[in-house]
Each structure stands twice: as C-alpha cells, then as structure tokens.
Image (cartoon, rainbow, N blue to C red; front, side, top):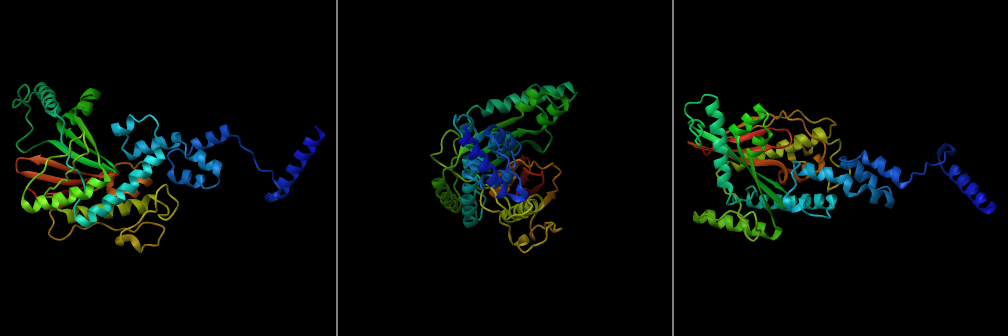
Length: 364
C-alpha cells in the first residue's frame, strides 16, 4: 500500500513538473469525453482536427453517432433507401466515398462538356401519382370557385408548368424529384401535411463508377446519330443514360462555379484548413484572392445566353456544408430542373444551399 502511494505521488510530481505553470493535466474518462465530443456533432472541421490529436481521440471523434447528422444533411435530410436500410452504417466512410466519387463525376463532366445527371425512369405506379395529384388539385380548385376545373381535371393555366422535375446527384446516389407546384402551394397555405407529402414524388438510383464513362460515350454517339436511349431503371444499375437536354451548358456551368466559390469564401474561414475530405479548391475567378473577406464579385452570363438569375434568400445550414462544398454540384449542391410548358421547356440550375438559381430559356 505504501509503495503504491509513493509511486502515485512521484507520478503526480513528474506531471506537475512537465506541464506549464506546474498544473496537473485533467484526466477525462471515456464517458465524459463522449459527452464533450457530442457538442461537436455536425462540426466537420472540429471533429477532424480532434481526431488528429491522438489515437484515442481519433477513435472517439469518428463514432457513427457524431457523423449521422452530417450524413443526413449531405443528402438534404432524405437518405437513399439503400443507405436507410443498411443496418451497420459508418457515416464518415459513406460521406468520404460520395465526395471522392463526386470528383470522378466532375472529371467526366469536364471531358464530356456536359453535366453528368442520369436520366431516371419513373416507376410504373407514377401515373397513379399524377392522377391522384390532379384529383386533389381539381377538388381544391372547385371548392375555391374555379369554373374551369372539373373533377379530376384541374385548370393549370394556358401555359401549363404545374409539374416540375429536379434531378440531384449525391456522389453515387441520384434522385429525381417531381413536384406538383399548385398542390404544394395550396397544401402549405392550408397546413395540410398529407397533401404536402403527396405533392412530391421521389425516385432513387445508384451510379456505378464503371458505367459513367460508358454512358457518356453512348450519349455522345447517340446524339450524333439523333437517337435516344432508355432511362435508367430505378431498381437496376445495369444500364445508365445521361440526360441530354437542350440547356445552355456554358451559362449554367459558369454560374455554378461562381456560386460555389462565393459560398466557399463566405462560409469557410480557411479553404486550406483540415477538412473531412481533401482541401477545397477555388476556380480561377477567386484563386488569387488572399484577403480574409470574400471579394464583392457578381456573376455575368456569357454573351449570347438567354438566362435570368435569382438571388438566394435561404438560410444556409452549417451541418454538412464542408462536405457539400467539397463535392460541389455532385454533392447535391445543385439540381438540374425542367419545367414543361405549352411553348417549350425552361431549364434551371437551382442551388439547394442558398436557394439561388439560374434559368435558361434557350429551349423556348
């Protein structure tokens, strides 16, 4: 007993001698450490920096519970069914995998000079969804006294545009979201959660790395021959077709690059700081900026383009932001949407982070 007390006293003395001002370091047990780290959940940079301190902190800072919220935020709080059903998920590993694959997609886009958004086929029951939406909207319009609406046949106006389709890519996972705009607006106004849920129809698919180049080659060949391909079946990844739409790629690409750089400089203190994924890179428009505050630059569309821009007013969520900015357009930061009207199609690139978007009217 005496020997143990002597050893403890010597160790305490050594610790006091080897620490600043003679303070003995605080020893924290694992339970207390987990409590402290729980306050960093969602703070990607702080968690990664903590994980570099020592082996024990590295293990603690990588626990799935700390990264689950960040993973959900990366997918806009809607996990793909393939991940939702996974019983033993490592959120940090999944997150890094998606950001790494987004770089593969960006490189393929650069070579093909077109966005790598897949064409996703609607499931067989989608027509039932359209019919149900029309029935609900028609009923709500009739109640409001719309004389041009009949049961099952709502009046959407002379130009149409009731249904919009957006395609998001989150690394390996892509989703097509179809919305009934009038139904969504009326549901929010009336506070009907059931109708608000009905107004959106979502389909997911998985993108295999080896299929992307093959699909881009087929897309280029088919475009040259004036042909068309089948859309990607949501239940299968055996075939892949890339969306070949008549949008102004140069204008939309220019806007997305500028917007990502603007957000990076505004919301990331130091682009070269430690992040859960490789360092952020800026395009040439911002590469030479060495100031601590972002430059006051505005985007100008390329000459000859027929586009309009809407500024973003949406509050930016910090959770998952670093990974999404790292992944860029293929981290769900933008969606490619199309609105069908009686006189043509309006394409737009919508920023999911701040709500800004650029609309392209060249196909009208």
